[in-house]
Image (cartoon, rainbow, N blue to C red):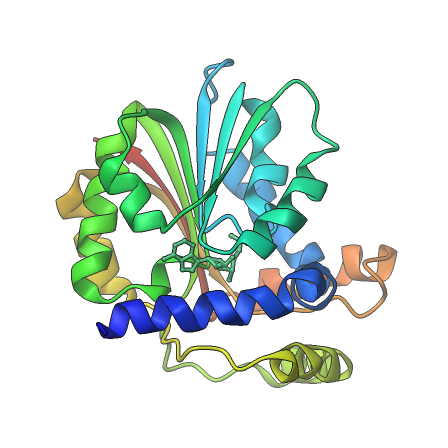
Length: 252
Ligand SMILES: C[S@@+](CC[C@H](N)C(=O)[O-])C[C@H]1O[C@@H](n2cnc3c(N)ncnc32)[C@H](O)[C@@H]1O
C-alpha cells in the first residue's frame, strides 16, 4: 500500500474514534483565539452574496459554521464519515444555506469536480499532504476557484521559536484536556508545513497572498468566558510569531 494511502487510512481510523469528542477537546479550547484570528481574516474577504463555498477537510464544520452563512451553497468534504456526522449537527443552526456533505478524499474531490467556488477554506488539512500532493492540491484549489475568489488557509507551520513562558503558563491547566484527546486514539504522524516552500507552491499555483499572520496556540481557561475574551487577544497581540499560520489568497 502507498504510504499516503496508509496515512489516510490511519487518519480515518483516528477520526472515527475522536469525532464525538473533537469539538469538546479540540475546538472548544481554541474557540477564543480562533474567534480573534478569524475576525481579522473576515476583513480580507469580499462576498458576492449568493456564492458557493468549499470546505476541504471540513471535520466537524468549524470553517463552514464561521463562513458558511455568507454563501448560498456550501460543500463540506471530508474522508471521515464520523466527523461529517458532527458537522451536520453544527451547521444545522445556519439558515438559508444549502449544505452538501461529501464523504470523499479531499484531493480526489478537487481533482475530479467540475464545480466552481467563490471561496475555499482549508483548516488543518493541507499539512497531511506530502509535497507532491500539496502542489497538486494548490493547483486544483486554484482551478476550482472563480476569478477573484478567495482561499483561507489555517495550518500548523514549522518554527524555530520557543513557546513564550507566559503562554506556557497560561496553557498549563488546559493541557490535561488535550492529553485526553491524544489518549483517545493513535494519530498518524504529522509534520507542520514548511511555510516558505508552501508560499512558493501557492504562488506557482496562481494564488496571490493578500493577508497572513501567525499565532501561538492560546487555550481558553475560563469556559470561553469574559476572562478568555479579554486576555487571549491581549496575549496574542504581544506574542504572535508562533506555530499556527493563517493566510488569505486571491485568485490571480
Ligand atoms: C485537524 S482536522 C480539522 C477539521 C476542520 N477543518 C477544523 O478546522 O476544525 C482535519 C480534518 O481533515 C480530514 N482529512 C484529513 N485528510 C483528509 C483527506 N485526504 N481527505 C479528506 N479529509 C481529510 C480529517 O478527517 C479531519 O476531519
